[in-house]
Amino acid sequence: MKNSQKNIHSALVMNSLLVAMIALVGCQAEKGPVEKAGKDIDKMTEKAGSQIEKAGEKIQDAAKGDKK
Image (cartoon, rainbow, N blue to C red; front, side, top):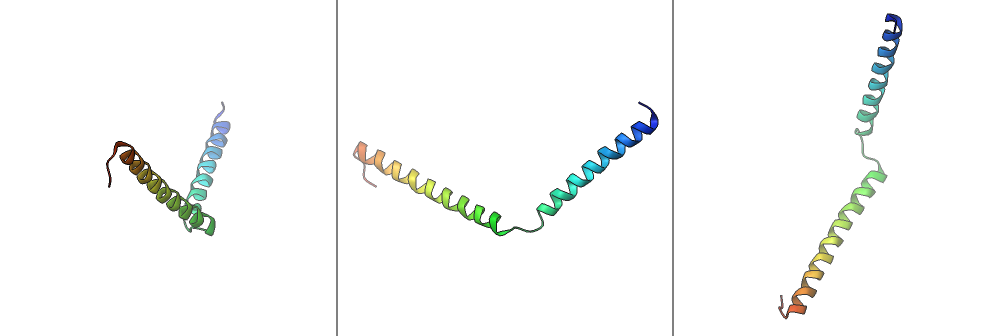
């Protein structure tokens, strides 16, 4: 590669990295309503999973004859 081609290639790579970094920083600035809704859904799913796990443990205990 010639020096001018190397310089152009380096400039393109640097610009691409800069654009990617700016995009990532811009995405983290504010949480939109969809992201908030997603987090709420995650919380509800975790809570439901915990309740299902507790119910499963109670069923296993009942099958063994233990009561809690």
